[in-house]
Structure formats: C-alpha cells, structure tokens
Image (cartoon, rainbow over all chains, first blue to last red; front, side, top):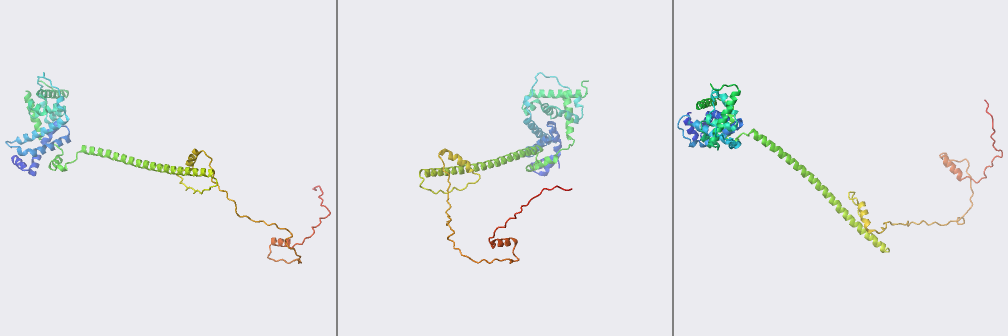
Length: 180
Length: 216
C-alpha cells in the first residue's frame, strides 16, 4: 500500500491503514522525540499522544508530494515534545547575550558519525538542546523557535551559541582538533 | 561555512533516525488503539502502592482508636453505674440513720426495719456507709436484738422421805455368769450386786524394805 492510499484510508478511519502509518513512522519519530527527551518512558508517552493527534487531524492533511506526510508528522511530534518540555522546563529563565556575533565553528563536530552527534546533543542542557535541535536538525529559524518556545529571537540565538560552544568544548576535551 | 556544517549535521542525524531501534512499539500502539486498556505506567504503580499503604495505615490507626474509645466508654459506663449505686446506698443508709434517731427519741415505739439487700462486691458499700454515717455526729445504736431463751426447765426439789422404801430379800448370785459377758459387764454386775461388806483389814505387819548390799 502506497503512502497516499494509506493517508486516504486513514482519513476514513481504517484501523489497518493507521497501523501501517504507525509502522512506517513510529521508529523514526521515537528517535526524534529521544533527541528532545532523554527518558524512554517519556518519549513513549509523547509518541502515543502525538499519534493520537495525528489520527485525529489527518482529515485536514493534504498529501502533495513525497515527504510531505513525514514533515507533517514530524512537526506534530516535535510540537508534542516541546509541549512536554514546556511543562517541565522554564525556557524564560535562560539569559540572552546581545553582543555575541562570533560564529562557532562546528567543522569537527559535523565530521563525527551520526550516532556520536546524537549522543553529544543529548549531553546538552534541555534549553540548549532544544534550540540546537530545532535550528540545526529541524531547520527552523530563530523567529520560529522564539514563537514555539515563547522566548525572544535573541534568546534563541544565545541558546544556540551556547549550545555550540559547549559541544566544541566537549570535543576539545575529547581531543578533536579545530581550525585548519 | 557555518550553514554547511549545520547541513552536514542535519543529514547525519536524519540518517541515524532511519536506523531501527528497540523500544515498546507494540505497547504504544495498543495504548493508541485502545485508550481504555492503556498500560499502567510503572511510576503510577509506585504511586498507587504508596497511596494504598498510607490508606491502609490510616484505616488501621482509625480502627485501633475506635476500639480504645469503646473500651473507655465501657469503663466510664461501669464507673457511672457504680457511682449511681453508691449514691442509692448512701441515701438508704441516711434513711436508716433517720429511723434510728427516731427510735432514740421515742424508744417505746419499736419499728421494724427491713434489712437492706446485700450489694455486690463491686459497690464496696462498707466504705460508703462509713463516709455517710459520719455527718450525722450522733451515737448510732447498734441494731442488736437480745433474745432470751424461753425454754425453762422446772427443777423440783426431791427429798429422801418422798421416796417409798421397802425391804426386799436379796438373793446373791454366786458363780453364775453368762459366758457371753465381757469383763466390763462382769465387773459392773459384780459391783451392782455386791453387798456392803466391811473393807478388808489391812495386815498388821508392815512391809519393810531392807537395805542390802549387792553381792558380786
């Protein structure tokens, strides 16, 4: 069964199509959630709520091209993870640094294997990790991140700067060389 | 440069997300499909267990308190009953004291008082009676009835002259004795039928114990 057909049958409430959609995206979305939340039971809870919302809102979704369903599902899952984080983490407590303009070089970091990158991202504090995931991995800009987290754009920039600084510090401690 | 690094990171992370991972996939699906049969979270189990323990402890404490309260109420009831009976007895004793005083004032009138019923051992009426009799400060006449023995045995004076005397021939019985008689009966019979005789004269020769020497 192809993806457009699955979507159409899910709109009619077909239980089998729903299961196929779940099997197609559950593993990937579970790892997405785990990048935001470090606890497995919490990630399962978030995923359960997210798929419930996906099945409830799929009637309003319009399939346009390959990958659009994944983007739509990913957005719902990420939003649900952010809602979970907002209940337990106060993003307003993070400070903003207006005078920081110097970019942080993450050349060595980007050369690491994907599993190592995910592991290092998991070592960041929740605020930094969230902004880094939203900006670098999900591709949102600072204005969108500020709107999603309820913080200013500058705060989002500061969080990203600090996150990258910490990642560079960790790589330096582990012996990675920066620069030329 | 910075954006290129971010793109590399994004692509690598996306590729990593495509690799399968072990997790409770079927459990989450069951929770999605059947929200009513959602599996109980381990943290919820701990929470409910702790709440159950606290509830059980509270119920146990409450029941123990109820038992102690019932015991106390029972004890209070018994004490009140004893006090009530003691008061009743004090009133009876006071009534008796009034009667005794009336007897002292009018001794010719003899009243018959019913004896009070005997109380139980729990009441301890002796102490109560002592306490109740002190405020009267009047001599209490003990309720003692002297009963004279109405049986009179008449004793008639007898004299020797009133008894008629007559002579009768006495035939001594010598040597006839029933073989079945005991020695005592025999002596009694001999004593009864023994004639007055002169006491046997003592021998004139005194017995003399002579001192002698031991011969070896």
